[in-house]
Image (cartoon, rainbow, N blue to C red):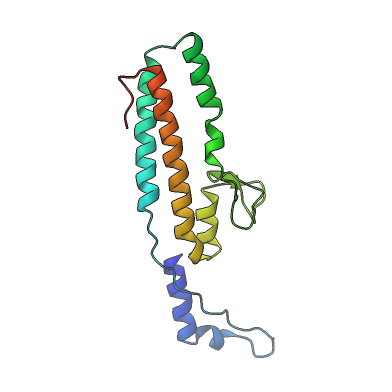
Length: 163
């Protein structure tokens, strides 16, 4: 996206679009695009790293056997309520009714799923002022989800859980 923006803006500055237009038609050259800024994905990368670690510890503990009785019920409740942690009350930008921040139908593409839709659509639609805020929201969601996995791991095997 950044390279394409630089290329198109360069063609505009050189007057190439204007030179190639048919004077008998009412076409105009495209407008110059705002330069694509650099974004700080570190919070998202750190959260994904924490989630990877929590998931690996959970998988190890899960392989050691299954708990019984009330521990199993507690574990099941933690797991079946976990996806709710991936939502936020305020919803997605432009779609407050859609609250899941990990995947969503594309705003313009319909049913095709988009991952991290708040971040991805802000970039794709060139709403650059929203990107950093959406990165922080998704990172927070992933950290909360990772903490839930740690909690579940502690129920399975207290010695395997990591913080």
